[in-house]
Length: 177
Image (cartoon, rainbow, N blue to C red; front, side, top):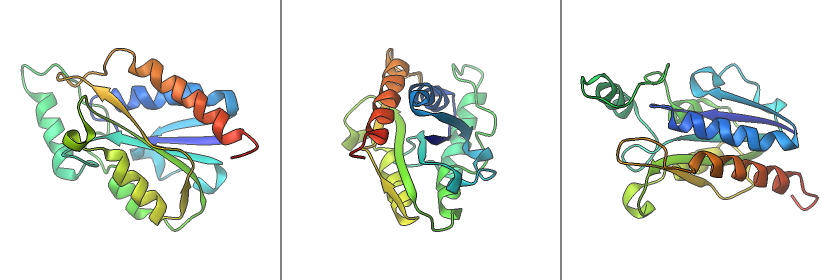
């Protein structure tokens, strides 16, 4: 199985989650993880599974204004976060809107604040909607990975992401999938 993991990350949390998911998925075949800024170079038809994940900003996927806000936060003198390369370039929303209609299997994930999804929102909800509109079949429920008030991954979330990747690999490659 060939899997592509496309992620958007502001402060590194979603990148760490994407890399952990990719490690878990490696039990089922070849996995390529790329930031969304480089995803335009990928031919999606060459993959059996496309995983897409990003940070939750203002209850959903990032926008140009929220990416700019993340950069402002990172550049403050007392900031405890560092901005990822390409964090201010186009995000998942724009990449997904630019995809041609296609067919394939997909799964979404996000990072979000620790709290009820009703209050925090979930970027994966919008990612799923856009993937379906492009013709993808969602083959698993989306998953959220939690960050604390300092915008750091909660303890154990990277391990949970890798375990989720392994479980997805088994699910997608099982004869029933």
